[in-house]
Image (cartoon, rainbow, N blue to C red; front, side, top):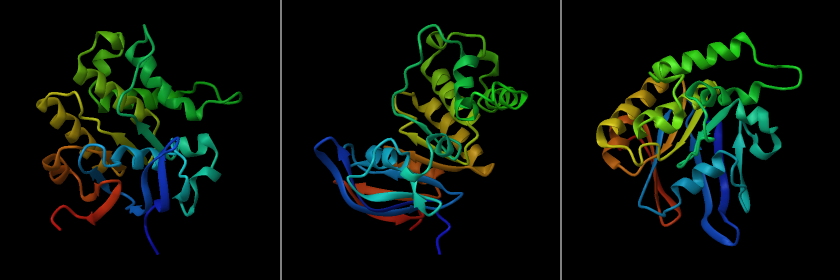
Length: 227
């Protein structure tokens, strides 16, 4: 019996006709801080996108709580796991608070409009990421480090137990990279399952409790950094 809420079973994944990985089987330990590492182009982001249900495996499956993730409704999945892609584009002219509020989309419906709970989730996300002082600013006016924290705030406002981040430190200077990693560690310490693709082995070993090591589209090994 595994404690993994997310499992990949014999999955072949890729884009259109281009297969990146074949026959992948791996568990994401529940409550872990997991880093997926390996050389550029080895399939790290492809695996994360499959886990996030952005990509559908050609063969095999991704399971959420023991059931194929494809069998869950989109909003149901969005309340369980949130994804921060490698590149995120904010709508032109949008302010920080309004972008972070988009993290509440999985909870909105015809019968459930914006509520005090939504407002509270947004405010808590802004405070947690230290972007509350930026809430009235245009996203386009922010520095790279500030903008990345705003995207993380949007992910946090989604209030999912599982957070997936695809190379969140890319394009950040070294100080902002470590600031962001410390932030993710805080979320993990607060009970979140954090799964992130990283290209820096030192960062992965410093912050992650569990590593998934990839090369040439395959999983080479998994386990604690000390192993």
